[in-house]
Image (cartoon, rainbow, N blue to C red; front, side):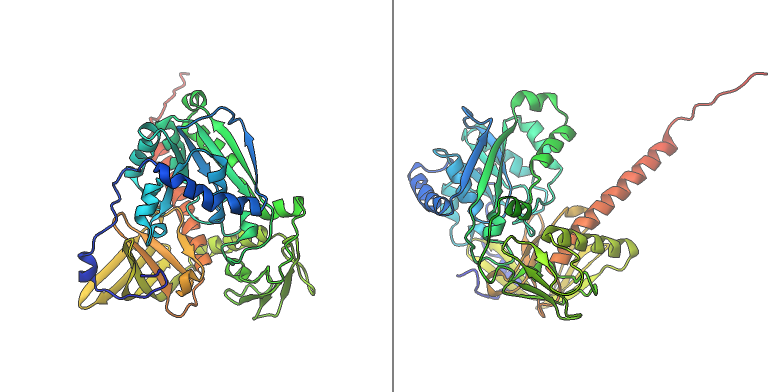
Length: 444
């Protein structure tokens, strides 16, 4: 079936379906498929004048780990050209396997559920490096960047690198978000570049702590496509360049209304107070009338994050909606289970329903998700979020399409940070209480 098809199934029917084999080790990319991968990648990278700069990787051969930032599908194509004549075992989300599982496995792709702990994944990466003698292509941001800037990275990266002790290369692309932002997938004419850099060799890994390794990785992953656009004077002349921007800039900085922003052509408008912003050819914003609160798109985006955090801290954050629930059991496609009630608040996610007399419930606590995957207009099904457990992955679409999935993603990340901060404070207080008291006495 097509990904856009809505096919209903009961819980009993779903339970009998074959499931993704999440334990299969990554295959060594088949030699006869390599020319196809190159053919699908090289022409487009030359079309958009993708420039690849290499730093410290001369003479480096597999096996090694390549950590890549993620802004569009174009990332995979440029990375394929960068490591030619080798092919990576790329980690790919399970929805990428729909209708093409055998092909992707044969080119070495590795199955992964997003934003869930996955201990077997370490074994698969180790298999890629030790047995396949290949390149482990990892996209640790785990989804396309929403604002053309670096997203949150899991702290487990440093632990993984330390455990495996193989060279680590970063592959940071610039301009891919500008070319095809996740909030509007129509391609723009933009020249792009990428930096392939050796940031950790074996001796450095052996001498560094996990915290130090994480610091090196996080520093390497700092990027900003809109800053890059201005610095390189990349003019985007498509008249519709701002269409879809309201998906990420959903709150008006003037009247503070949420979900009232709209976009058309090069304009972003608040339907509540009428404030208008224009996006120029260099990706900068300005208000024709009134104060320009934000000129740089990522600044507006991060301001929204602060608003959500303040709502959480004050106890005023809560999202509720009836949602269509699609489940992804295998590569044949999604099956719709029905409508459930979704609640997201300081306690995390709660998804509940009763279908054909069978109760259904999924709970996810704040510390179980450091981030979450969201989609905009996903195959004509609307904006949605996906929640995974260790066994299943669910795609959820608001029946009325009124909730803002970007806000939910902010809330998930900020709730996680707040809970980690609270746990750290509690641990310090507990340590202070249990620490042995040193008594002194003065003899007079």
